[in-house]
Length: 625
Image (cartoon, rainbow, N blue to C red; front, side, top):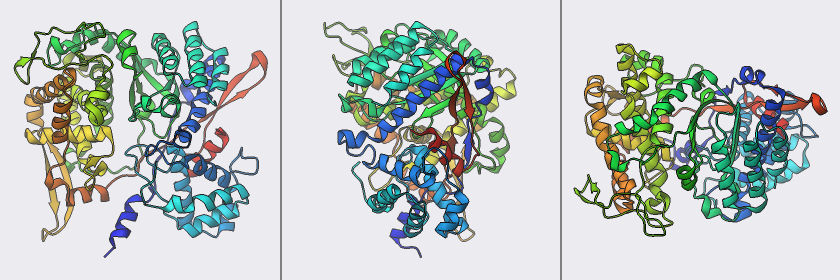
């Protein structure tokens, strides 16, 4: 029997056989003009420059617990080991393998670890933020570093080897130049003002200048090349990093998917009426719904340790209130599928329909989540002059009494709700998506008008959520009693709720003698979902929205902690099963852009790489950030 130490080590080993997915952006890239390509190229360069600053955040600011303080050194170790002498090309991997004396498995594990460090920008998974260590032994890894011939790499290895393999807890301006180049190729004055704001902010570390840049970005409606450099799906408080807030930011460039964006345009056009159908009533809805830009994008560059499927930005509440926000759906990320990927926890009776609908259901879920989830709901506020943005006679539907709490000047959901704030909001947005999946107007926009299709997408959307909630046990730490990922905490909470209301259940498959849990299936009652699903999740939505609207910090924390606590019967062998069956996360291999020609004849070429760990390593070497 394996020892406790061996079991712990196994959990933290780097993934093996991770699917490597390309971004499939070559065709939309060809349709750009030379000017648009150059703009995309230079904003992409600025984004990747920012990635190095993210790595440096702990070292520069002394922040414990965000990232390791050796992220830059580890990145440099990988690049120096696998690049040739001038660091601009991939070394001869076959020759390095032969000199190092590794067998095929050991070599694969070494490349896989290197690729995962590069795509996460650190030796922590971007989703769930748990450390991973090499599967290859420390001695064998040293052989690879030594035989690379790089004295700098060998010195870094000497400094880092123990940290790389340790399972003990750890304590946890480059962007400006490419931004100046991007400005030369901007499509309009708004983009130029946005870039000016970025440049000033990156030089000074000013939050206010970055807010102004974000304000200009919101005004730039429907650009052909979309981009943003800022706080994107960050779950650390950016203001805790003041004055040097830059380490919390990331950046992307992408090309608009015109066909899918047409659907989103129709959804935006109807959004102000659609939010009125949400179950908390007009008193708890925003007074004026600011119609955002909602765009489907084909990602060209996403310079961070993990790419989301959709984003709703900027995250500055005052910018969102005064100017608005944008919703972005990342179409080529949504569509990325690994070949022969096992679909865990789905019953064989449901598998065919699940495979037929999961991508389409997720596309609709992301659209409703980003636009009508994050875009809805009012915060009850008192301003510095003592004026209120709500009727003081409003009745709290949870207490049946007048509202007794609200946000005072300077308060935000983050400061009032505290540690649960981000996940609480994700739970609210995910539940909005479930509530609206049966909305006929929305379904028509996305082309679902046949009754069978309407019923299937509702069923699979609920099943998709329930499966995610079960898989969220992977991100629950039973010793610390805490969740390691905000979205997965939200999904587990929703699944708990669905189970408690009889809409979902877990079927356990045991060995013949009953001693071993061999498998489990999450089942959703299709008939109940179609008849009761909307009304059932409406109750959860009201609870979430009212507590957030009224700045009920204590009530929100207590409610959400109970909602997202795994049932006691899930914490033992079922969680162990989820960990045994966890799938390696997809690794996205991003292309590079290269400027060719001179003067007025400049153009940009797209350089793509083999969908392998070696291809990932080569892409980062050539990127030279």
